[in-house]
Amino acid sequence: PPALVWLAVDDGSRRYLLGADGADAVYTELSTAGSRHGLELILPLYDLQDQTQLSYTDIAGGALEKVLPASQRYASQVILVGQLQRRGDQWSSRWRLHAASGDSDWQTGAADLATTLDQGLNQAAQRLTQRAPAPGLAEQGPSQLMLRVEGVTGLADYARVSQYLSGLGSVRSATLVTAQAQRLEFLVDVQGGAYGLEQALALGGILEHVPTVNGTDGVHSYRLRP
Image (tube, rainbow, N blue to C red; front, side, top):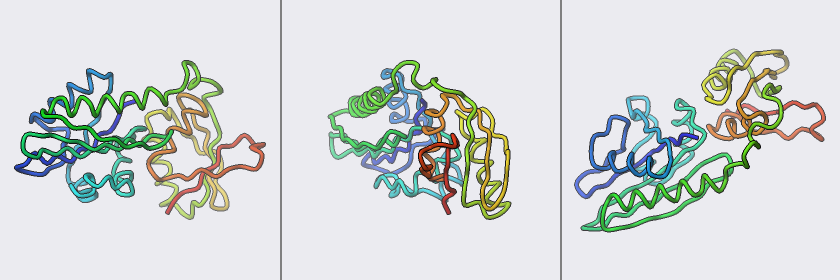
């Protein structure tokens, strides 16, 4: 799946966050490395909305508690957070990959920018490949599922949930079926069936999975986080 990349850059002369409108050597080498390793990369707009939510320090420190809410607007199932530094004639990078199957961290370093970024994205590609489901697994089971969301206390919460579901790339449609006692139930048509639904909702920090007793009702239950 496409990876949303938040990259904090310290090139020795300035510190900045790389955005989608980047036109420097870092942007070029990152794009080249992504293509080489078969990664589709999404760079944030880093417009006023992003700037009010995230700073250079947040990205450099890998603060996922701030990165995840800021990433919701991009509806990506994979988030790659990195810090790239130049000290003298040496480049180094630190990375954190956040995906539904878990998080991982690694570091790279080299005398040139291209090699440092190439090594970093090579590690990302390997980790995503290792975690990918076996061929055909993601499409097993029905694509239309029942999704229950608890903890919905009013119209604002309903709008929040509805907007979130409609923004997920793997969710084709989400139709409200019932609404009662702080609980919503949606009929969702999701790419990849139950596996795709789990992957999509594991990110973003909006919905928290609620285990069902023996799983007998066939409904996928989640709770809306504050």
